Structures are given as C-alpha cells and as structure tokens.
Length: 98
Image 1 (cartoon, rainbow, N blue to C red):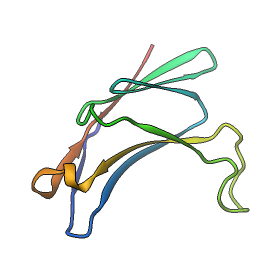
Image 2 (spheres, helix red, strand yellow):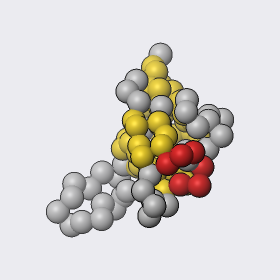
Image 3 (tube, helix red, strand yellow):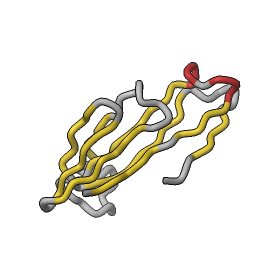
C-alpha cells in the first residue's frame, strides 16, 4: 500500500483516486469487492472510509483509437476539497486478495 499525498490549491474542488478494472465490482461499506475468474480482491478506503467509492463504465472508450473492452470500468474515490483540512490530505487505499 502506497499512500498518495495531495495538497489542494485555492482552485481545487475535488481530489480523485482511480483504478481501472475489468472485474465485477460490489460496493461495500468502506470500499469495494472486485471479483473475476473465481478470484476476489478487497479494496479498502483506509483514509476516508466515510466516502463511498463509485464505479463508472468506460465502455465504449472515449476515443476511437482506444482499445474497446466491454467490461472495463473505473473505480473512483472522489474527495471534495471542503473535506480537506489545511489544504493537505493523504489518500490510503489497501488492496488485498484471497
């Protein structure tokens, strides 16, 4: 797990952490469960567990030259700037498998 340190500027409205996956995603309290090919990966939002992750389909891909992957989706953790104290925050996400 590598923490991601961020510092907001005066114009910052949102800090976003994201991950692309082809797995099936189930949103759970404090993160998500990803399932694919009989395997499972747990995504835990350690730094901001009160903020729910969201899932956005990225199929079809935005550009014609992009590879088209039917099951591709983006998992996002969107942290509003007003939730950041003193303009600094650290996002901590843990991924753990079976």
